[in-house]
Image (tube, rainbow, N blue to C red; front, side, top):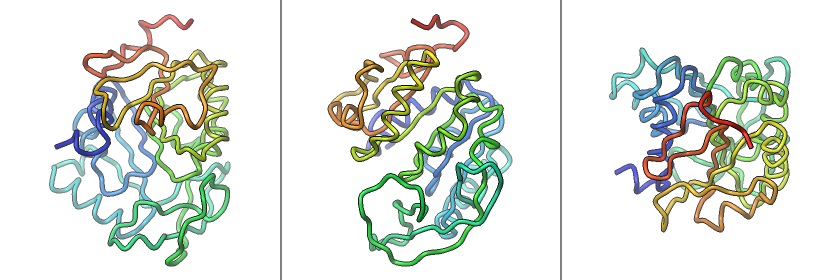
Length: 243
């Protein structure tokens, strides 16, 4: 079931999508969140996946679930640049058909990883994809900080709900999320993968790359309103009053 993969993250993602028009998922892999969110979203759901074999599996899963009409799949990488360009993508040697740790060769915040091969792919600017979205999920293997920084002005004003993977080595990302939360009035909530079955509110001012791991989590939500602790549902942004 959904709980066997990343704990409560799937449940929370469904709830967030149910209340969102304009959803963007960066790093779709084979599509578990695209299927969960694509069924629930109230408007256009866009998912971006750069590895051809993985994007093909994602498309197959969307087709099997009758979601090709509701979900837009882009086979591409997402980049922090202002204009589209071709980029190099590292495919790690993970001994599996569909690698989960593929990442851009330049600009990533990652520990050293293996290389099986490097491919070239289309790179689409994050800011152009994020415009008009109410909900954004980013699992992009180390480029998250650069992507968010490239659309910082948009995030401050529009304040879409963000679900972001924060790895222990992602110090730049953690610093950016902390600053963004304090500047834009975001709350930060950890989503445990095991042990706990409810969202955990965090103190934005003391947030670091190590904080999510203290709660068996690597994914966090930045939202204007608090997440409901029982259902994992976010209140409508207009009903929230920032601290």
